Amino acid sequence: MPTITTDDGIELTYEFEGAADAPVLLFSNSLGTDLGMWEDQLEAFSATRRILRYDSRGHGRSGAPKGPYSIERLGRDVLCLMDMLGLEKVDYCGLSKGGMVGMWLGINAGDRFGKMVYANTAAHMPTEEMWHHRAATVRANGMQSIVAAVVNRWFTEGFQTREPERVARIREMILATSPEGYAGCCEAIAAMDQREAIKAIGNPVLVIAGAEDAATPPDHAHQIAEAIAGAGLVVLPDAAHLSNIEQRDLFNEAVANFLAD
Ligand SMILES: O=C(O)CC1=CCC(=O)O1
Image (cartoon, rainbow, N blue to C red):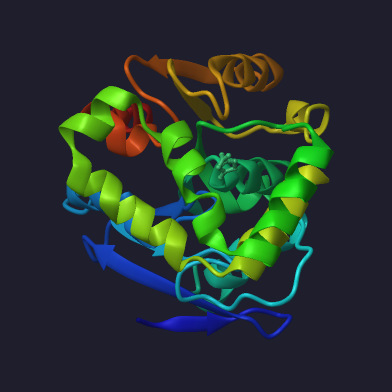
């Protein structure tokens, strides 16, 4: 897979696919996944959009330098990727950590983005202690030590029973994540508080939540949508944290309607 090198020397892996001359839609992955989490969106949007997916720092095939990282650093990585590919402006869709990075980009580089989707995410995600504890756990005991709890937060029981193969693929992604990369991102989330700053976002924004999401419950989505002028909000039924997979058709429909508006 192709890579770019960021301004601080880290290699980021990306895939640039879909309709060659169409407007670019950039996808940013969640904590513990890689660009493969967007397969259903690639399928749905690649006829009408040029799709840019990447493995965020510390994840997938991208570099995983020693943490802690910051949401700002993760946001600057996106700007480096766009600069290296000669992309002046793109539409954006990020889930969870990808949404956190998207909010930082909307606040600090809004003119580089058109429409922005913030899915299953939070502007502030306490407690700091919980994130530091999780970072210490994976550094000491590896990804195996948290994988079962993570999967149970990410998918409803019903989905885990109905679609075990899809859940197994995500489980493999979590296990393949660098513990240091994962921990560095946990520390970025621990230090994040964007609740005030997001009020300055001027981009058209769609906020998506999963009704059954225990990691970033719909309350977080309501707070984001209320803080950003004109933001839309869609709460997907029967979806936990990875709503783009669990409710792929409804997720894709919500994003498509927003982009077409
Ligand atoms: O794994 C979790 O607990 C939920 C989560 C927080 C940030 C992210 O990307 O996933």
